[in-house]
Length: 249
Image (cartoon, one colour):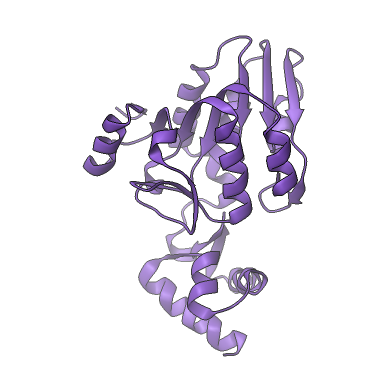
């Protein structure tokens, strides 16, 4: 199949499903990850899609571009609530997500130690003289603006933090999932390094499932989200004694 034919097929698929991931493109059209990315770049240049983290959405269904999503009011509320959980002298870990980045931007200058793999979070905290920042290295992902891969995971294993704030591409009864193996690998290492795991996510991530498994729900201590959970996930959260905070109540 030529790229032209493949792109037409993707556009037809998007008219029904409205969004698509790199993994779906790889599986459905039997192409490599690099080819899938090039196809999405081409579709975006043609004005058919807007690329997002790990995929794309149909342009006519995209309200907020990925780079601006962190400013969505629901994410700001989630971030502000997360900030209330951080106390002076805590050892905190932040992963790479737009909502977690907002937590860093909302933090006051106070005695803290922060471990992260995100250059944007480092930049957000760089003027806070009382916050000690530990930057995780590894293979730099330009799109996510963070360090991922084996080296990053190895470095993370050397830390033990009080609180981890982590985003999720998808959350369901099977737990947390991610759109790439590198991202899932680093998230798993972060979870293993933390005494308390708080997932920050808006309701759009509920019951979404991606190819790469991050952890079971039982590994999560708290979920902060903007709308009530579905009955199934709420029941699972109660079973595992997960605290659920709804910011729009």
